[in-house]
Length: 148
Image (tube, rainbow, N blue to C red; front, side, top):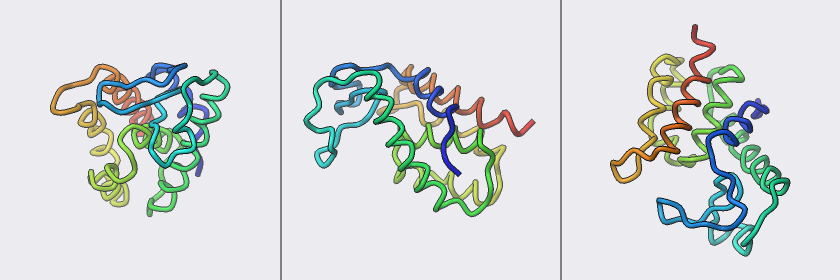
């Protein structure tokens, strides 16, 4: 399974487009639609980005996340659930996702419980971050759509 346009739209809706490299609330540098710039990243030299290039970078990131998520899922999820999970992982990282226990719950098909956990990841240093809360609310809503 791969991410769909819903994942891209969700991220574009809940993340600010950064045309220039910025240091955000967590003291890390980002560009585009919250692409984290790492020391080993090919974007480490970027200082400016166009919207078109930001979308390409986002798609590249989501493709990598999709491959990892798909490889670790033992049970099927639907497209909305997959897209919500991809968006969550985009913010918290795959290691944090695995250590959170969400993957274990998914593999036990405890989808209702997973749908309730998204808001937990809207904090930084124990404080709620508005943009994270907004993203988690939208992800949770998308994830739960199929549970009705």
